[in-house]
Amino acid sequence: MKAAKQGYAKAQFTIGLMYYGGRVAPENYISSYAWFSLAKISGDKDAIPALEAVKTIMTKQQIAEGQALAAKCYKSNYKDCD
Image (cartoon, rainbow, N blue to C red; front, top):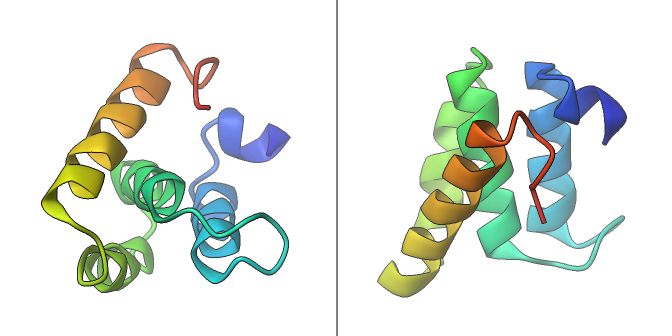
């Protein structure tokens, strides 16, 4: 998480995977979407198909919440990502 909050794309992608799969962190598609979005912005090419995959199992409301969380996290320089 520390590396992800320092803007490292691969760490952000990994956090997205953790929330997507629910293996290390509780399954949370909104958080997964947010971290995949941040990884995409940071340049991780693997985040693009992952983001599309998680979108297929989310409602429009959840996607909107994921977008809002990603924006809040990004605007706060990764200090407000929860």
